[in-house]
Length: 272
Image (cartoon, rainbow, N blue to C red; front, top):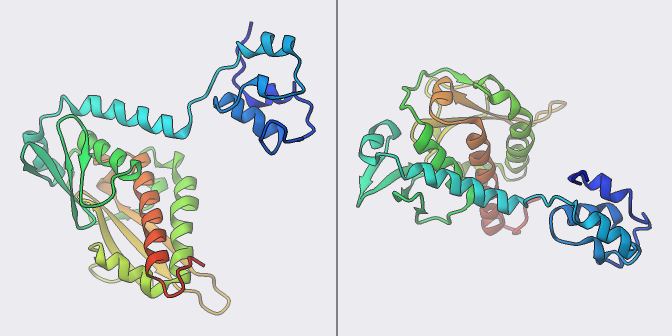
């Protein structure tokens, strides 16, 4: 019998009354929860035993995002074990510290152990752990070109362009609009400096989340009849030093970090 992987296939079997008796708000949400392993078909009081018995064994459980994160990190950590740290340090812009790679990131040192585990003075999470491991594995030590391009112009960046625009650039624009002075003060605290030669933007700062992967953040404040604008550009060499997915996760991590800091340090403790 065919496997059931799509929540829509399960939804067709349900009463579609959104009764909530399964403790999930809607029948569609229940179908998704079953596929994700959070519920079983038997949790629906309106499915008869024969249907549950016939269909239950065909459901293919999807991994949750958290499980996918764990698996991704484990795969990278396995690859890190075969990396020669002494040979890698130079191309990464890193140093060796007690057998670990010390990689500068946002003004802090992140220490990568030979087994791929990571330690730092900051909170360690997937948003920075995953990109740093990928950086160790992928970085060729390419020299910066001084030519700034958007995500869509990076090799294989087209697949990530819309995600990056919405989840990172747009999210940062909203933060910059609501807390302009605090937002750019935070960037400077994390080592961002002005672009050499200047720019037409109201703010144009170069941030280095990784030694060989600088971000150029440009922000134009709102003017009468013209909306504000924020974009993030990358040195053309970035494709030789990291993958676009890792850039996306780094950007997402920055957004989350800035949100938390704004809530902590803004006058009213609110984002917007």
